[in-house]
Length: 107
Ligand SMILES: [Zn+2]
Ligand SMILES: [Zn+2]
Image: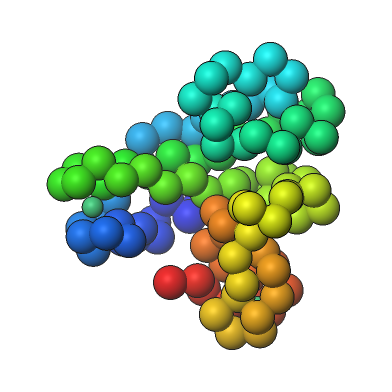
């Protein structure tokens, strides 16, 4: 399981703690998640899951999509939620820990 992977905070490089798996139904997503998932409303009623990690030091939050969410989001993620793979340069969701195209870990 990926829980074994250590997530480092982008800001202070502290090991992040796994907080919870957050289910979100796109329709009627409450405020906070709407802020983050925004345009993903396009996905329809599908239930997706995000893993939430929190930095115990500075409070930074990082989100990771599970396999199913990753595939769905890859199709529909708006540009604002994309970053470029460090290895192959393709546009991938900002929450990706690995490039879905070349498999390279994103730092
Ligand atoms: Zn931090
Ligand atoms: Zn790549």
